[in-house]
Amino acid sequence: MDARLYNRTLQMAVDFLRKGEEVGQLFARMCFPTHHALPDPPVSAAACLFALLPDPGDAVDRVSRLPEELLRNIVSRLPVKDAACTAALSRRWRGVWRSAPLVLHDAHLFPLTSAVSSVLTAHPGPFRCVHLTSSYTDEFLGLLTTWLQILAAKGIQELVLVNRLWPREAALPANFVGMATLTRLYLGLWRFPDTAGLPRATCFRNLRELGLSSVLMESRDLDFILDRSPVLETLCVEASLFQLRLRLVSLRCVQIMGSFFQEIFVVDAPRLERLILSEAWTPDGICTKVKIGHAPKLHLLGYLKLNARYVLEVGNTVIKAGTMVRPNIMVASVRILALEVRFSVRNDAKMISTVLRCFPNVETLHIKSEKTDLATGKLNLKNWHESGTIECIQSSIKQMVFHDFRWCRSELAFLKFFFESAPVLKEVVILLATDFTSMEELHSKMASLESMKRASEAFSLVVNGCSDPQGDYIRSFKRGSDFSLRDSFANTEVTACANVFHHAQ
Image (cartoon, rainbow, N blue to C red; front, side):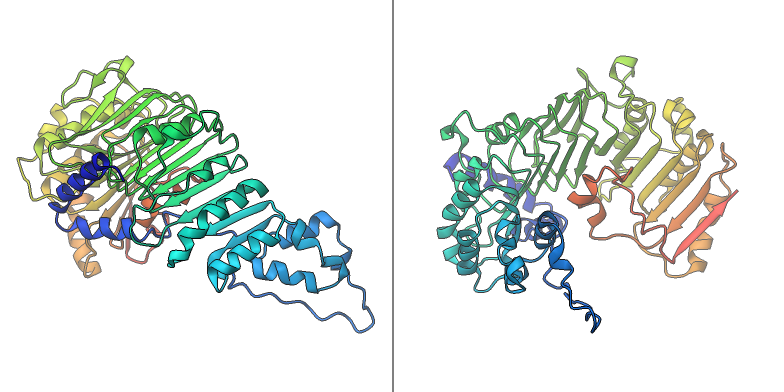
């Protein structure tokens, strides 16, 4: 790790230590990539294999008579040890496992390194999926270069590669860039190789999904990969302690979680549908800028933090409280928007109305109330009404989800304004920051909400005391990139929880 990158990373880490309680979360995430950061293997060694006994009068092996392609498909869905064992079933099965694209997960093998080497050597390829995530021995790093050479030569579709050893900045062998058949790549706890010395003709022509968890790299290195991945659709980045400028061109989904990015520029992103930002942080004295340029398909955006250390720029206009929002700085495509705001900080709360005017067609709004010890004045109901008409509240928002609601007066004032101004509203979900102790306590607090005037007579109100303290549904790479889910920010399990108050007027 060169001195410049090391010193910069160290300074950012020191700045972050000043944030107190958050340091434990960051340390855990950097040192132990968790289930939400890495994809699940497509097979499980815990599954039970069984067969029904044949009829005594029918001794025909019907499974072995299946077409060769179907047998290979069956074997490719088995853990590698079970796949190899199928060769003992009969002569018909003997060569099937060698011709099937295998799934290799090192957690299923023992002794790990020698078993992995044996499988990679014995099988001619290609490999459907390889997870190398479980080795804690020094032998792992010594063999990794050879393993990657074999995979590059024999062909591989999906690769998940995690360094479990100290030092965490161990260099990732550069020969993985020769894997032209890769469609999915996840890396955890590595120092990315310097791309300056790599062949300029390098191309990940089939790569569709890229995940980076606690990977040390320079901006030029990520640019190198993105520029050479013409069909890349999903980029997931977690726990990155470095400055990075993202240039998004052909991606459909970008997720950035628990990281510091000095600039996120959506300059020309004709295919981008989702930009998900979660638990971002900034060192002292530095701002994070999110700039949205050409993104005609951007459907889901957030969480945007509304405070002085996070800058939102649309087109060439920096959005501030009171900015005159004209059509040229509106992002009409966004339907799902998530904002994080400190309601007890007056200037932060004033940003809500201005930012909402930039997204006139929002249908689902997520508001997360950020806890802070800094209080610089609060907005009351009169202040909200004086902010003027907000197009999306008046005409398009049908659902609002309020996360980490604390029943403070500034939050209640915003809810009153929202209820009075949203004639097409269908549902409001309020998720409490802390659970209530009894239904009686909840009903007493609900009195203030029940008495509020409503522009929509038909919307339902759900208040829930159970929460997701780990935030896994927000941080899940799988959930964020699942395009069958309309709203990646919604935790559907919350509304099914037992402690629910439902009110329809």
